[in-house]
Amino acid sequence: MRAAISESYGKIEDVVRVSTVDEPALRPTDLWVEVRAASVNPIDWLIVTGHMRGPSEEAFPLRLGSDGAGVVCAVGSEVTEFKVGDEVYFRVAPDRTGTFAEFVAVDAALAARKPASASFVESAGIPLVALTAWQGLVEQAEVAAGQRLLVHGGAGAVGAAVVQLARHFGLHITATAAAEDADYLRELGADRVVDYRTQAFEVFPGVYDVVFDTVGGAVQERSYAVLARGGTLVSIVGAPDAKQQAYLFDVQVKPFFMRPDGDQLTRIAELVDAGALRSRVDSIFPLENVREALTRSASGRAKGKVVVWTEV
Ligand SMILES: NC(=O)c1ccc[n+]([C@@H]2O[C@H](COP(=O)([O-])OP(=O)(O)OC[C@H]3O[C@@H](n4cnc5c(N)ncnc54)[C@H](OP(=O)(O)O)[C@@H]3O)[C@@H](O)[C@H]2O)c1
Image: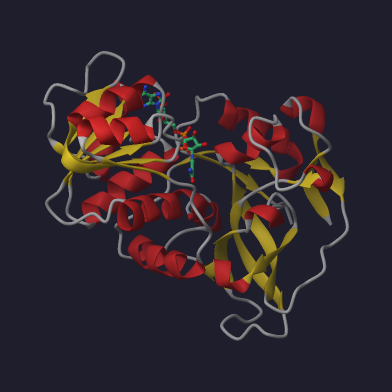
């Protein structure tokens, strides 16, 4: 089968190629999925370039791609909840990447039926970012209706999912984003949009119950002062000063890394079908052009998800 691989850490154009590879062995709990579309997430090119380490140095060539959508074409002997022909979407386990491929083996517990109202391309852009938003809001911040949320990078793929889920949970939402994304964010449910290029978000100190940080660095450093006492800063981009800032500002600081979860994807699909969550697609590249897809995502210019599709 054809799949995108990386031979070593390096520049995308030097180390990524699409090659004919062996099909992985199917485990009893696996689905064997014909991939229709898969989305690029920053983790994919961060691993290619060596800025994040893959599951194992000995794993080269690395198979690339973390989430996607497709059709089940075989099931392992212990799988009961899926059958051949089911349309599914998934975030694969970090040590079993490889969704930029014609086929992928996915643990059934990490997959769910894809939203009926969304195409394969739209569905492929949802798993990793929506799980991140869900886990940050529900598990880390334990949000409740009426709370005030500040989300940094609201127009990014994760940020947009945070805004939409927060609206569903009844939060009051302020988002930082570029001015050109303000209308898009209001459409998604933001009550207030702060143009990060020209405006300061810290006009009112101590007002937010939750800050959801997808940007980090100086933005994060400036965010502690806008949290109410006892408030929570959730970060998906690390939090180097977590302990000190939590102590100084009397807040909770929760950096976390998302995990794959099929049950949560089922709930997320219900929200998509109810019209509460949608995916914005920036561009679509055929599998053979996966390098261009990774480069587009890494450019920082994409507005929404970059999707890789498998030609039939
Ligand atoms: N820990 C985890 O589990 C986890 C999970 C998913 C993602 N991540 C990480 O989270 C980050 C975001 O991922 P993503 O997929 O959402 O990326 P993305 O789609 O590229 O979005 C990034 C967004 O940040 C905005 N931005 C940049 N600088 C900003 C600033 N100073 N203030 C406000 N917004 C700013 C960008 O706006 P412009 O378009 O104006 O530049 C863009 O909309 C990445 O670093 C990724 O690796 C971590």
